[in-house]
Image (cartoon, rainbow, N blue to C red):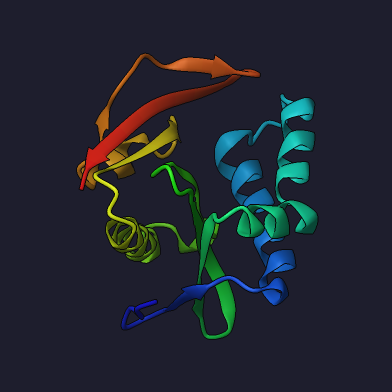
Length: 157
C-alpha cells in the first residue's frame, strides 16, 4: 500500500487489532453516540471490533488498511470485495488533518485494483459532509438502524 507524506498506510495485521478496536470505540463514543443513548448499539460495535471478527473479515477477503503516524494508529478502513466501504474510522483528535482523505484515497485505489466500478457505504450524519466533499452522492433515503441515522452513498470509480 502507498504511504502519505505524514502517515504510513498498510494492510492490517493481527498486531493492529487491539488498537483498531480502541480507535473504533473512541469514534463511536465521540461521533456516533456521544450521549451514550444506545447501549445495545454500543455493545454491537464492541462485538464488531472484536479481534475474532477482524480475523474473520480478513479471512473472508475484506481488505483492512491501517494508518499510523509516529507509531500511533490514527485510522483504518475496511473494503469488501463488493465495493462496500464498511468502515472508515479516524482517531477523533486526528480528524480534519487529512488522515481520512489519505485512507479514503487508498481504499479507492484498492477498489480500482479489484476492478470495481462503484464504491458504496452507509455514512453517519457526522460523516456525510466528508463523503460529499470527496465525490460521493446520496443514493437512497436516510434510515434509522437501532436509533442511529445511516445515509446510503456511492461513488463511481
